[in-house]
Figure 1 (cartoon, rainbow, N blue to C red):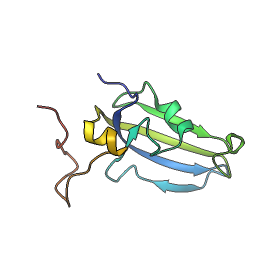
Figure 2: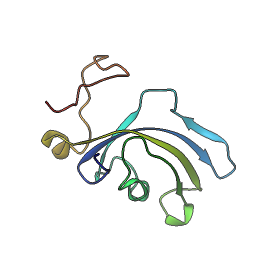
Figure 3: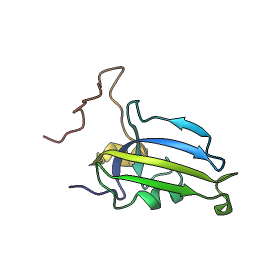
Figure 4: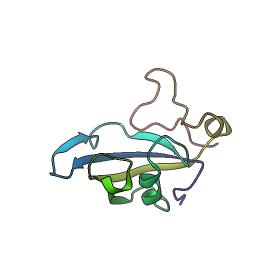
Length: 114
C-alpha cells in the first residue's frame, strides 16, 4: 500500500476545530479534498504529520500558534481516503490536476494507473 510522501497526491476528509473546540470546517460528508504532498498546497507542519500515513488511516493532527504559521491552535481529525503517485504535470504545477467539470463522482477512478 502506498504511503504519503513527497510527490504523492493525497485525498482526505477532515474536521477542523479551533482551540476552544468550535468546528470551523467539516468535510467528512463531502468529497475528499486533494493536495500534492511536498508542495506549498498546505502548511509544512501539517504535511510533516501526514507523512507515512496510507489510505484508510485516521489521525488527530495539531497545529500550534507557537509555530508562527497560525494565529491560534487548531486540531484536525483527518481521514486519508486515497494516496497515489503524482503525475509529472502535477509535480511541475505543484498541485493535483482535477478532471473537467463534474466528470468525477464519489467513486472516481480517474487517476488509477492502467
